[in-house]
Amino acid sequence: MREAFSAFGSEIYRPLVTLVLPGAIGAFPWFIALMDRSSTVRTFVGGKPPEATLGFLLVLLFLGHVFEDLGSLIESRIFDVTCNRRSSGQYKENWYRYLRVAYRLEPVGHRYLRTLVLRMKFELNSVPALVVAIPGCWFSNITVVPKCIVTGVLLVLSLYLMWEACQSHKLLDEVRGQLLRGIIEMPSPASGDAGGAAA
Image (cartoon, helix red, strand yellow):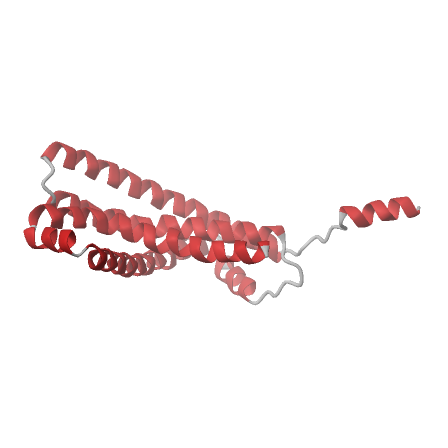
């Protein structure tokens, strides 16, 4: 039962982190700008909150998928190419070898790899989301000084997440390389104790 809950949790958590959150980052400033500038939008949101909420969620999911595509494009066109050059072609070979692996026992490193992939996907998807959010801030009715501050923060944050995504990508390559070297199967503590007692 516990495994079912943890699997359900991860199935919900992954889209929240990689789709909904980046979608919200990109859409929220534009939503605020529309609320500031359009009385029609304000009337619609105030008069029909369920429909407005559903529409906003659909926009979030749509943008989340667009940002995920852009993040994958960054990964394949920039990170994969530089990683492959750095490793003299070993990166692609290791990646395709890893895709063909079927483990009888799940190594600890495999769970760590899933965590790294989730983190990198969030970082990559958030970069285009932050860039899209910047013009939305400038369309709102906020004064110029806060707009400049928010723009600076979003730019710095997007550059930082791009750098973090690059580090995560390198670490993923290293972990995959270690997993391809083979698994060390350790005896369980219970069987070790039993062997010691029998001796």
